[in-house]
Length: 599
Image (spheres, rainbow, N blue to C red):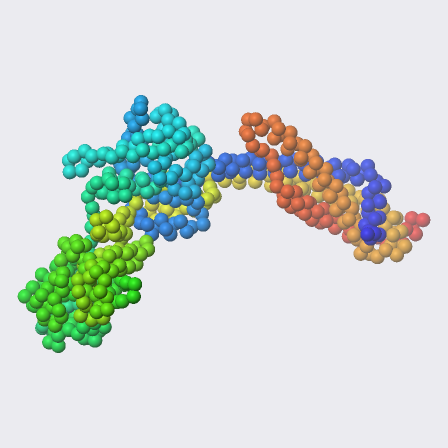
């Protein structure tokens, strides 16, 4: 492809005056080279420090400064954040200490929970431990005299009912962490094992490990109750039922509304009231208070819940009722096998049901949605339901209502519902980047959660980066201003020297616009050559600097991504173009007659 004539003339003119061109190229390159080296040192130093801070998960860790009460929902929501790499609950400090027994030593060591993708372990020569496995910190392995692959005995102790109890577990050491990971003696074990240890230390039983202990039954909770009264309540009675009971509102209800919920009509001579708790569900204690306030009024109370849905394999509706023999007689219902409402009943009482006529199964399995998923449990068939629905004790419905706000489980061994752990007292958290730490730190402070993070180290890095940036731009501005001045002077002087030549170009037919582009093209060519020389100089100098410090620092301290070279090329080309505009304007003022006058 043939270049335009004005471009060829610009190149040939520079070649003709190659000594002046070389001086100009070297002058600009002498400005660009130190700027490139300075920028490379700034970028390389900051990137090296940033990389080292990033590579060490300790710098990305945020730890709580005090004991907290955090729910599973909190952890589930927090894991969805884009700036979090890893988060896991931790247990109380007093529950995390276990005794490790070897052939030679017995030491108390802190137990730390871990799980998949734990960056502290994965970046420090470790592997995620599985069931009955653990990872030791370097200090712990040294103190115990244990190496990878050894077995250790972990003893968990507690005091319950003034008696000392203990259990032992054998754990296989699958990895020993790099010394930089943790300076303290610690054992990293799967979260389930750590959670079991805390449950045992708090006096609970861990059935999956055959560790004996007490059990915690879930309390009953309800959203309101139906109140059937043979007499209308006075205004004072209605107000009294909303004072110190947990109920916030009492309203009169219609018989068809009652029938729609429970599938039977109340007696005609009874007034129907509905007591509601709008903020938090009420407990069985609130029901007892209402009973005491209605003593002597022959009223019938029927607790209910709003959002508990229980289903069987046929999606049959499940209704909760617990009534004494006298109450079922008043309501015109057959007697219920489990009788009246009793907050102290166990699952042997709660796990009963009256089934529709077509269901002859001795036992059916029901399912209900609870916090964390679904829960299934068996129900014993106690006879035929008085309508097309499944009738169960209202105590069972109350437990499932509790399961919507607190975790519950159905223990297959004991055949009963148990309260599961719902609150955690701390966390181990690692941000994806050290750049995310300040924002996360501010978030925790705004939530009144005191945390410990490497804020000062990160701020020091930012201050250093800002300082180096200011120094670079100060030197760059001075250098660029000098380069522009030199280029402007050189091009303008060149045009002044070549008035006759420019006039001849105009005389032979070149347009004003073509000669206008002449010094611009020359400026761009000079800058392109200067960039090539400067880049070559930078490569040589940066290689020397990195070679000198590689043994001491271990990383390149002078480096630049290729995109920076492209950016600098574009910037210098724009500056060169602007610098040549004065000389370009000068060419337009030269008339063809200048060549004739020179003759």
